Length: 296
Image 1: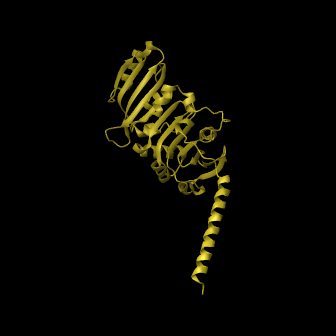
Image 2 (image 1 turned 180 degrees about the vertical axis):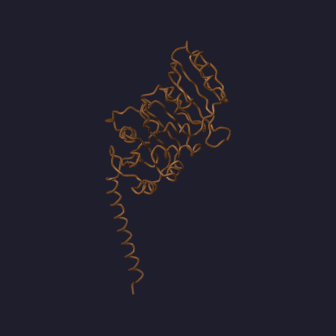
Image 3 (image 1 turned 120 degrees about the horizontal axis):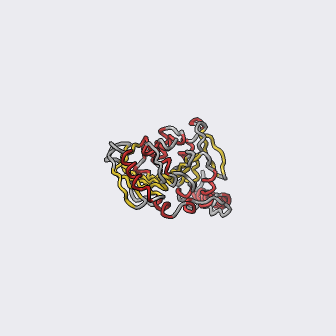
């Protein structure tokens, strides 16, 4: 029979030993733990020479984002939906050759990574720029989730990963430019300031944008395009677009406006010359399918 005093003494010794072990383990692992990361703005990870940029408030456009992730990466439908549910803001860039970059912020638990990004579902893990990335074996898109707050995807993810390391760990050795260092301030702010549920689009190379949205090319010098897409009167998978086209030659503005009115004949949209070198299209119906067609 163990006396109460002896039992209490043994228990105190055990607690003391456990406490010393815990402190020792904490000191040991704190020395080996990864350095603390600074918050990373997802828009900064995109290339600065893309033909088109899309800014999406995810919670108001979950279905669109899930379809975009599935279409671009080849992810399973349910996995794409689960990704979209955990994101807050997403940014997409499309290069002149059609390559896609996707960068988003949100709250992504580490348990989701192992569940959704395994070899059975077509993903293979590798290390890119000191970060674990997952390559989809069919589409060859690479996905990186370096923290519970960031996720980004591209065919060549190395530049985005370097930018992430530059911001997260203040790595001054990284020479990759951030998006804010590449775009004009007004264009960057247009994409970055999300105050509503609307999808924002900016294109400094508008030929591809005009062809995708209007189904035709315009043989006039359109220098840039801004667009704002809102849900179309509650209709599922349909948007109402307001598009602003900036022209480089004021002499072509009137003729370009007339051409657009002809191209959009029969479509419930309004075309007006809103400046010496500017044309605005309002109430232009755009389907989600047409927008997603740009993510080839």
